[in-house]
Amino acid sequence: MWKSRLFTPGPTAVPDEVLLEMARPLIHHRTPQFRKLLKEAFEGLKYVFQTGQDVMILTSSGTGAMEAAVANLLSPGDHCLVVEGGKFGERFRELAQAYGAAVKTIPVEWGRSVSAGAIEAALKSDPAVKVVFTTLCETSTGAHLDLKAIGAAVRQHPETLLVVDAISSLGAVECRMDEWGVDALISASQKAFMLPPGLAFIALSPKAWKAVEAARSPRYYFDLSAYRQTLAKEDTPYTPALTLVIGLVRVLRMMKEEGLENVWRRHRILAEATREAMRALGLKLLAEHPSDGLTAVLLPEGLDAEAMVKALRDQSGITFAGGQGKLKGRIFRIAHMGWVDGFEVLEAIAAVEIQLARLGYGLTPGAGVAAAEKVLLSAGG
Image 1 (tube, rainbow, N blue to C red):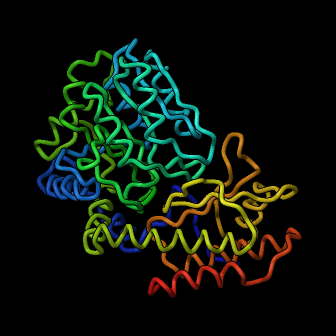
Image 2: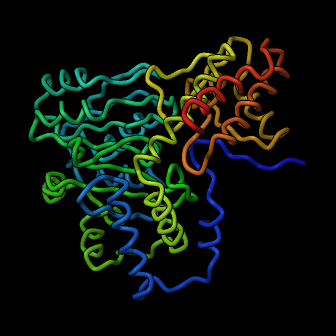
Image 3: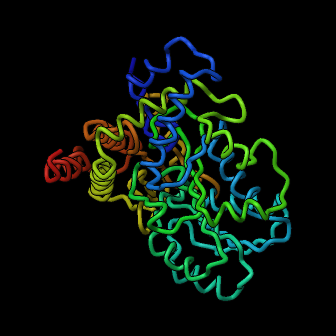
C-alpha cells in the first residue's frame, strides 16, 4: 500500500482547501453570487499575468487558448513565425497550418532555447510576419527561454505580434506580460495554478485587439470578442466550468497571500534542489536553460525511461512524466510546480534513487537527497 504522489507537469497536485472549496454545493452561473466570484477571478488573473488587460477564462484545455490565439489573430494566408523546439512548438505550427496561415518555423534542437537574435534574424528575412508564436517553457523538454529579450526584439517590428504559450510556466516563473511586450499570453489551470484540467486563460494587448478586428479566420466558441464583451459584465458567453472557477478564486487568494515574487522564488529553489540532486547522481539535464517549473532528465544508454516511470507509478505510487515524441524512452520529467514543497521534492529524489538502484545503475544511496538538502538549507527551506 502506498500514497499517490503526483510530480507530472500537468495535472499537478491540488491543495486540500481548494478541493474542499470545489466540493461545496453548486450555484447557478447566471447569478450575482457567481458573477462576484468571476469578478474576483478576473482581477486575480491580472495579478498573475502582470497585466492591466482583461484575462479571459475559457472552458477548455490550454490547447483551446492556443487555437483561440491563432483563430483571432490571423487570416488565411497571413505570414507567421513559429519557434519549434518541442511538441508544443509543433502544436502552434499545426494550428497555424490548420487555419491556412503561411508558416515559417525556427527549428530548435530539443532541449535548447531559441535566442532573441534568431527571432530578430527571421523577422528581418520576412517583414510580412504578423505573429510570432513561442513557448515560455517547452513542456516536452523543460527548456526555458528569455522572454524579456525576445519581447524587446519583437517590439522593434511594430506590425508584429508576440504570442506566448506560458501554460507550464505562468505562476511558476517570472513573467511580466505588459512590461515585456507580450501581445497574447496563454496559460491553463492544471499546472502552476494548482487546479484540475479544464480552464484556459488568455490575455491580449491593445495591439492584439486591433488584429482581432482585422482577422478573418472563422471562429465561434473561441471568438475572443464575445468573451471580452461578457467579461465587461462579469459574465461568460457560454456555460463555464463552475467548480473550477470557484477553485480558481481560492487559488488566486493563496497566490496573493504568498506574494507572486515569493511564489517565483519558491519554484526557483525547488528547481535548483532537483537539478543539483540529478547532477549528484551523475545524470544529465536535457535543457540548456532549464525551467523552474519542471526538470527533464536524460537517462544513460541502456536504461529505459518509460520503464522507469511505469515502475515508479505502479510500485511506489510516484508519478513522473516520460518523454514525448523523439524523446520517448530517453528522459523522465519531474515537475516541481504548484502545490509542492521541499519535503515533497526530497521524496521525488529519493524515489529516483531507489528505482535507479533497482535498475542496476551505480549510485551512492542518498547522494541526490543530500545535494538537494544543501540547496534547501542554504535557501532557508
